[in-house]
Image (cartoon, rainbow, N blue to C red; front, side, top):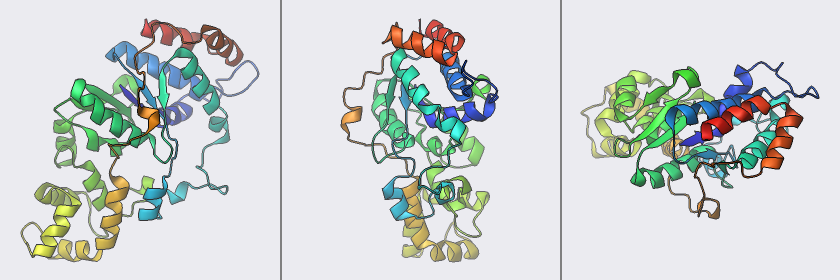
Length: 301
């Protein structure tokens, strides 16, 4: 099980009332929500291994270089991500709790959590099923019936997960099961600052990806003069958007081959007991987390 941890703690922050506080009055809604999410996932899905994947870089240079608009709307005055202060203060607590419990937690400099997930999913699929837990549709491109690699999509909450494989993605978007990245590049994704090809909406994007398989395939068809599969309008629009599409393909594709020491020898086995019981007890008492921590430990055992 690979957790898109930033996606989950943002969801917890906005889903659990900020009135949930530690004894000293500090908000701990994101911490409590995330711990309960993990407990529920472990209890329901019973994974043998689990990794909390992190953003070491939420806006990697290679993506910004390809497309400067990538997440540009989220850049704060100091150059960082626009994370609410009440959430930012909880992130060190999240890290400390996960470490004390003994859950694998990893990020790689220069990459987003998505890329860590992509790399670990590619490695893990050879050994059996992989569950990716996220609220980010970009990760739909990783579904693979061979593993299988499934996405447990959290849009309706942890208790109402939408479980998506290749067939489900194909049915939902009328595209090849692993074609979501190409589809997103064509139609755009405002949440990531991807403008898309002007005039190309969901239906046209789905038809083009289905016909040609990839952005590279679409551009190759244009170069070869293959008119089949294009309306005259779509041909003009794609031709005018060549530079954008070349950049967008780099931006939307999740990296699946990170070679980094952080991922070498990663111990992702679920702990049978806390790694640091004393630290975990201290954290639970200080931040008022005894009940969610107890639920997580019960799920792990």
